[in-house]
Image 1 (cartoon, one colour):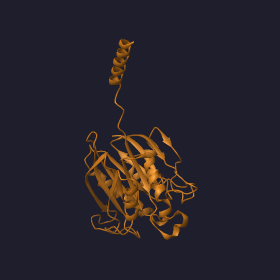
Image 2 (cartoon, one colour):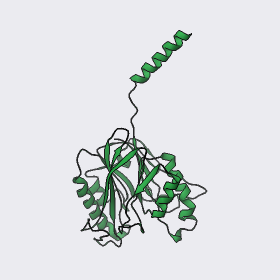
Image 3 (tube, one colour):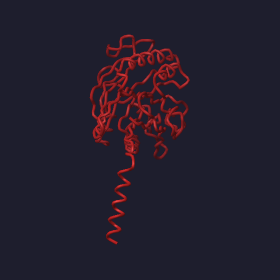
Image 4 (cartoon, one colour):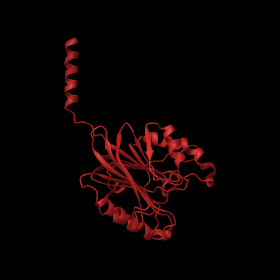
Length: 277
């Protein structure tokens, strides 16, 4: 019996060694937080911040690009999820307004480099406004290195203007982002998260997907509704939150639905995609 057990153990170990390693997938989330406002009543931030953190905890993404993030919201979140940290200036270059805050897991990723620029005719000018926008629009970006294998990737996070008459500004923003990405090292993957406030039929989407892929359109596995904005109703009407990429392989994507007692963590559903880096 003892001899057979040893043989069985040896066979099991040999088989385990012979198996290919399971891919260490990179988990990326895009999440419009819905900023703090007194207009939200029962959906105010204080009533949903625990559910917001629970939504992230459920999937435990490696990196999250957020939109509309107030500093208070970012700080509340890392109190509840201490394995994360976040960074980024707000759209006016300080910390008093909405941020395109990027969260990442400290046990999974190292921040190598980061920066930001504005979607305008003068992208290096803080809080600059062009193209008929009524608020500054910006990109927060980072170069990350995965601790497990030292592979690197760029993440860009953005939030385009929301009005119907801003379609031209959204198109200009996409062209500026495409030009900026075109200057990055070709061998380093790029991932974009954002609330683009326009659909996949738009010129902005066509401009960006000329050089990148849309995870929702290309991942072999999809879950959840296609649309993402629902205005706290749970009934989404528009696919305006995208994850775009180049230089990696998308393995799955999902629109994440979390609710408690009829309430939601935000007026947008987050989108989460997994990649082979």
